[in-house]
Amino acid sequence: MKIIGAGLSGLLAGCLFPGSTIYEKQSQLPNNHGAILRFRSPKIGEALGIPFKKVRVYKEINYTVGGTYYNNINPTPQIQNMYSFKVTGEYRSRSIGNIDPVDRWIAPDNFIDQLAERCHIEYDSRFPYGESGGVPAGHPVISTIPMPVMLKLKFHSLAANIEFKRRPIWTRTFTFNETVDLYQTIYFPGNDTYLYRASFTGNRLICEYVRDPAEVGAMIPIKQFGLESVIAHRASEAPGTHQEYGKIIDIDSDIRKSIMRQLTVAHNIYSLGRFATWRNILLDDVWDDIHRIREMTRMDSYSRDIALSEGK
Image (tube, rainbow, N blue to C red; front, side):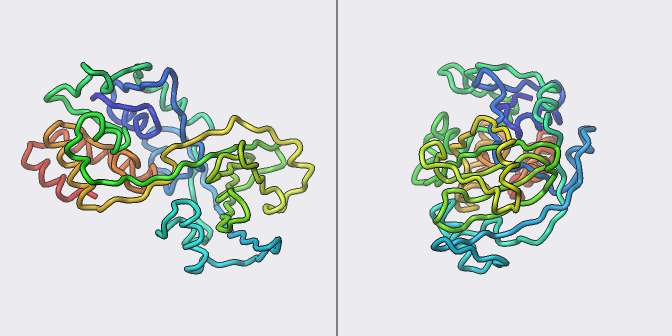
């Protein structure tokens, strides 16, 4: 199997398709998932033989107006809409809608490296970007390339009159000492800060912003989590990350499915991942999609057409 892109989706596919080649245009692992990464179940870790840690995650909404902090805020329609507009510029359903405690599974810190060690990756690859780097006929290809990029590269006719809306995000990660071991998330729907979400995973605090904190200043919510200020001075900061496709807005479901079906039927390209399928999903969903792709590559054309028509 040929796999385009060595992000998390591509690496997971490489592990589930032994003997595959992953083509990555960068010279090293992109590791571009700077935002919080939690799993809804242990199934991926169990399948790969990589132990995940089960944790209980607690959530809160921090709403501050005019310097006054309001606690015990519920995700009312007003709060949900404020948050949605802050992160996407539109009013849509977002994760802030449910702040009940949940069980989640956390992968080890070197999870990406462990996945990469199991895969054959060709870095600095121009496939399929170069003039002669087209998709070979008759051979299935898994693409994690964002849908609008794929259409612009090879399939201009499919992209007519489709607007792929997205918003970039910036993240900063702070690592504290062994006195901190928390699994918590705080949402910030208000306009008093460009920070929109902050999450503790063990002793790491991941802060997510709608603007570049290097330019507008970075709020670090130590007080909001109830930590002593002396703890903050002992934290180390990792280099910040920027995700151009941080938040995406779903396109019409029928149009999205039609594009994916045409890519598969006409060119044997299977779209995988949030950006390639242009829908808001988690890695648990990506794992399920990989299994569906594996099943479809073994089907005859008629059965595959039926499976594609029933896809999500």
